[in-house]
Image 1 (cartoon, rainbow, N blue to C red):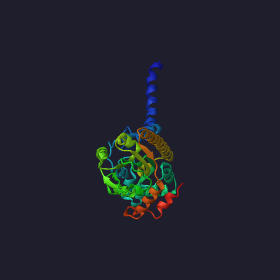
Image 2: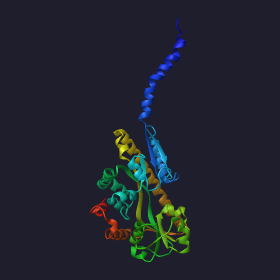
Image 3: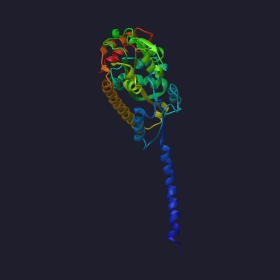
Image 4: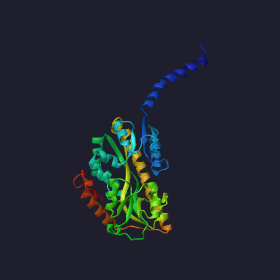
Length: 329
């Protein structure tokens, strides 16, 4: 007589062998997404990307490589192009180094605010620029990731309404031709100073002011050595969540939809938290006794755009692009 008890392990083993190919197929279907960024794991954007990671956990293995631990700043775009990484947080300036037309997307007073920027990227203009990136760089752009708006912060108690009021102001700007041009477009005398030396430069009077997003000014305690924040809103700062076109094309339509939905959610969350933090900073600076006010932003925008169009900075820009972007409502 054959024992039923003795046959049970054999049945169990057979069942395991039968399901093994299914499990292997499921494992093979899971795709890895390595994401590289230079921002730290303490950044609001890091939290947004952790949400992206959670949203895709059922189908993708998303690895977050922050603090430039995988690729250093300025090398991420080439890494995406070569297929060395699937996804990255890319600066628009990186695109402009290979596509001159893209330099307009990194210029000052291009976007009125984050809402205007989002509408531009979601509309026909954004589609044109995404197509340039796709066709010329083999990069699929998922969307712009906002991280703050730059404003002027001054030590002198001079009231600022228009660019003419900035005459003679020694405004610290980051080193580099593009940044120095922006300082001139604001009507100031741009002065390159390393970020690490900026507090002392403001304290000693080496410079009269600086420009940064409000949270950075709070973190660096610039409010201790200045008297006012002029909400010039001259640069809506963003990077671009982007993936390798080679990777993107290898996905199913459902997988692409899932990634885009998760990216859209991360972008919305990052924007919401940055805007809330900026408002908190306004309230904080006022509580510290500083003046916080908006100048005639339209006058600043008109003067900056006039200077861009009259300079070599606009070489390569598509004809009429500023008028088209200004018309987006």
